[in-house]
Length: 171
Image 1 (cartoon, rainbow, N blue to C red):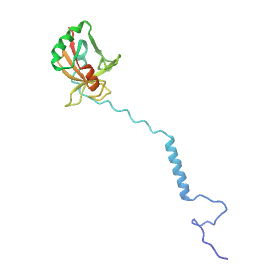
Image 2 (cartoon, helix red, strand yellow; image 1 turned 180 degrees about the vertical axis):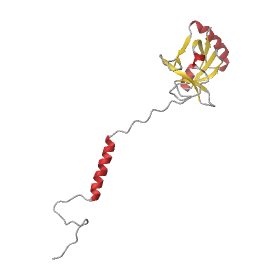
Image 3 (cartoon, helix red, strand yellow; image 1 turned 180 degrees about the horizontal axis):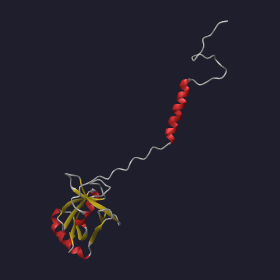
Image 4 (cartoon, rainbow, N blue to C red; image 1 turned 90 degrees about the horizontal axis):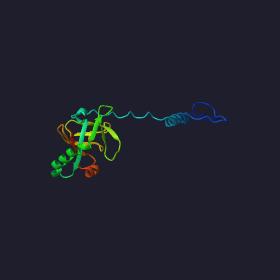
């Protein structure tokens, strides 16, 4: 009678087959992979609202304004006169609930709270606090002297339609 070598692990062959160690590890690993697929990862944290300097305080913007607009720079003086004449039907800027002011965004019939925002060394913008300075819904401040405010929409298509908005504080 000849002796045959024993299989790895030192056990004699049996009628039922047991899984090898590598197969068992593969099953355990597969279970962990499937468990990882079944659970959803936590949602990413909400982006922080950037902190801007605010060169124009909300209190400086609140008031009643005559409003007009121009497309050509040579029309700026005439448009300011036209805006002043609109004080009989003023555009009203009021305090917002969170420290900004309430104004209309382009093509929107509801008031939205906006803030004055500026990244140091960049232009000043007026727009929603959650948008980055210079975002598509913002208006760039061309000039503001406390009485006359000139704004230009950042979005080129909207700027083309609306031109430079001139707000003249009503007496």
